[in-house]
Image 1 (cartoon, rainbow, N blue to C red):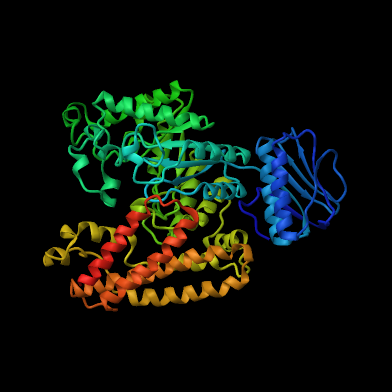
Image 2: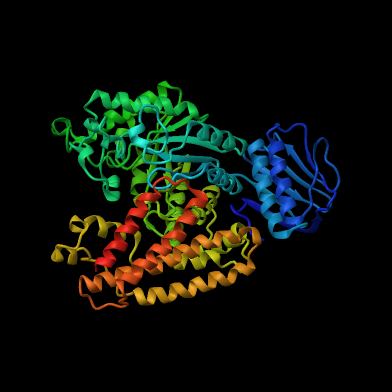
Length: 617
């Protein structure tokens, strides 16, 4: 039997408990009324896995029943789960603890059905704040139903915070130039999601880009004059440029007024006590309109001064500011200049992410979250092993340097081409390693996730898709870079085109595709060993794998036809164009199962360019 996160203490006994069809779920009167909802979650889960619909009531414990109670001797978020021969008891220090006990019991019932092993669990989280960060801006804007299903998943694995990254994907008043090309989130949707989160003990924290990464805002006719780079409204759209440019001009007072107006409009939609102002990757700071000021006082001083103003504004509204720590980590002593309440979100995504930034920020007195990543951006399928290594390492830094939280990130660079479901394994890694310090191997974690999340009796699904992800040779970021660096995006300049693949080794494509197809067949075979309610989760992986296989072939063909390299395979470019268009038709079907139209058209533009380009070849 598997549990994730692993309990702090688990002891089995030789007794077992049989959940009868006429058992009851009984809530002690000392429990908060919110616990009624947790009982309903358990009732639905029991019905799914056993076919028994148990009644829910309040009162004293009964024989052969499941009993919820509050225990004032336990700490907040600490619970005891006891399974004896005649009853099941969940005792919690608060309502959140009772919910965590329910989620653990649900995992047990999912595996054991109506006959449960006798056991005693004492459990609690080591790190107080355990969150997930989801990009809903640079490609995908999820449907509200998908976001609610994501919240359900966070709760199942005992996470308690969620942030949605917003640049231009909220329907701000008077900013229709910014969101007019998409399908933005509305105030009503966010408030409904906030309430849904609250019912599951999850804090929905607002997150709004406010300094760097203001690409859509600062290339509008109305606000281009606030961009560091002159004529930003005259530049064509680029997926690469969106990641690299458009920092706001901090020397213009109108910049501060605009950003604080947006924060003030966005903030009331949330019940959270936090507000994440982001303020990361201010690449253009001091390079354009503010260069004179940068030459006088330096970009670090400019950065700290504007960051402090934004933090002070958030605090004046009664909230606690959060910000990304990539800029301040180079001058950690500057932390002392910020309001004491400020929280530094210290991010790093390498499998061997170094410890230095965490150490110097801790020594400078920063209050910090450690922020690893699920390694899905610019990938058809998330790099699962890389995410495991990164998340495990960053969580260890959080434990070592007493970080107050872990915020596991899921970005959407270059159009968010990967399916959001593919981040599930990384989400669970973060939930597990932030809950406790226990070391669980990559192989063991993947077996547990395959069984618990996908109801895969072979326990092999995650290991299969993890290997599939490594077979992407002509990766999505290569696809985008080749297109956007192409001279005039036509094939008129032969020498320039030849230089477009200077360092890309595509010689391994035949071998990679052979292994990939073998793994795809394994995925087809395990469908029969999955619960029927989970089988729909396989199709997105199959579509993505077909995409990897096809893009590998496209890359190999281009470099042989254009660059005259001796690699295989070489195929008819026109037939590849047709295959690409058919593949993308299926891809769009998968996209629409979880996402609004959002920026699907930008991915379509990439597909169309390659199809046309292949036909020209």
